[in-house]
Amino acid sequence: METLSLAVWAVASAMAVVSFLWAYRWSHPKVNGRLPPGSLGLPLLGETMQFFAPNPTCDVSPFVKDRVNRYGSVFKTSVVGRAMVVSTDPDLNHYVFQQEGKLFKSWYPATFTEIFGRDNVGSLHGFMYKYLKTLVLRLYGQENLRAVLLAETDAACRTTLASWAGQPSVELKNGLSGMIFDVTAKKLISYEPSKSSENLRKNFVAFIRGLISFPVDIPGTAYHECMKGRRNAMKVLKGMMKERMADPERKHEDFLDIMIEELRKENPVLTEAVALDLMFVLLFASFETTALALTLGIKLLTDNPRVLEALTEEHEAIVRNRKDPDAGLTWAEYKSMTFTSQVTLEIARIANIVPGIFRKALQDIEFKGYTIPAGWAVMVCPPAVHLNPEIYEDPLAFNPWRWQDKMEITGGTKHFMAFGGGLRFCVGTDLTKVLMATFMHCLVTKYRWRMVKGGNIVRTPGLSFPDGFHLQLFPKN
Image (cartoon, rainbow, N blue to C red; front, side, top):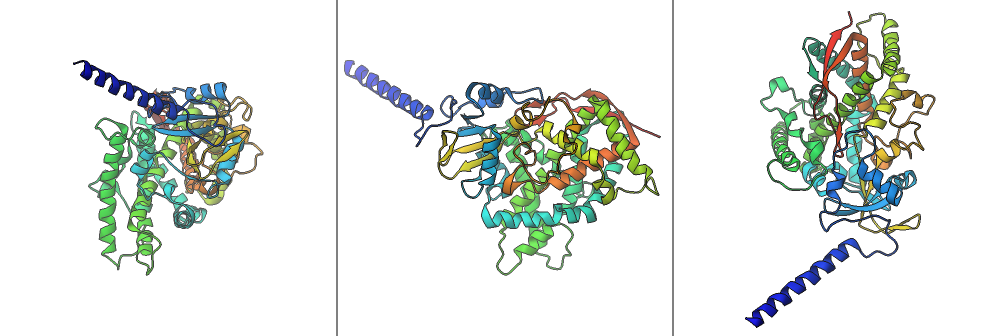
């Protein structure tokens, strides 16, 4: 009996020692240099709970703000089981973007890769990434926006707003998501909800919450809902691709046809897996982020009548200068919207739809006396820059005039990265700007509105409207 007790005590002691060593190594990783200050939290769990703590404001999250105050503009942490360096430093952010493909490469949490696919465009590098970007610009580049998409977007906005005007209230985020999804899905895969038995958009509903989460595939979790949505959407896309691949006589009608043309080449660069993951990412990215930003934008306009008045004046002047007041929006009119462009940038700055942009260090990186070890993730934190009072005066104020007389932003800068930066500056930026400007034009020239209920925001850390944002529209005439 005594021998058994000694054996149990020895095993327990050994487990305690092993656990202590494991915890110590977790919190004190080996590095050739000096890590940025910070804490890696508990083993595996890290500081994940603090990272996802709800923030009911547009301000920088308490998670980031508290650590910047304690450690400075660059600190280490661990989220969803991954040690990483968080950067709120404009110089380091710019350096990370400029050195992509040399010292850093694109990287995302495991949940992102599983949800968007192992062959998604965010995980590809070098020639393949540039090749796909060129293909996407055939759809979302300025030439196609000017020739096709502006008119189609204008028509969709007019039709949608007219249908809303007859209702006692409309939940804006859901309504915008539906409108934008229908416009972009038609260009991507000729999808028309009225002619389809599949409600394709519902498969993407939980994505914002699930992209950066624990990869626990259990019913009720955001990750589970995302994976379920992915399976359903991929089933539809695979069926479409199989059907079209078997029909060589089909005329080119959408972006999927372009993908299939590439696949049919003698020595194709594209694979079916890459093509399907690209279509899946484009379907999501084309509507959800823009709908969120535009919903917050309309809320900001509602709360700031002086800005709304100036915006309305610009758009009513455009209508007055037309021979036919009911004519559709032209490219020249869109490009003349100086104040609207400032409003769009200000919405993007405050919205911070993307709370973090991820990269991975390819080798040990020295920065201001600290070392970012090879293999570590780096999270660039746009909100900490966009809401920094040393960069933007009164940063939480909705003030489009702060962009007056500034050069047009055509890429990411040290102080503005709402659309990314470096080689991976968002290819859908011009489409987003067209969608936002067109919707605002149709709204302020033809309608008044009042808030019915909702409008509260929560960031976890992605933006959401837990109670919705319900409006009632009234035709001006």
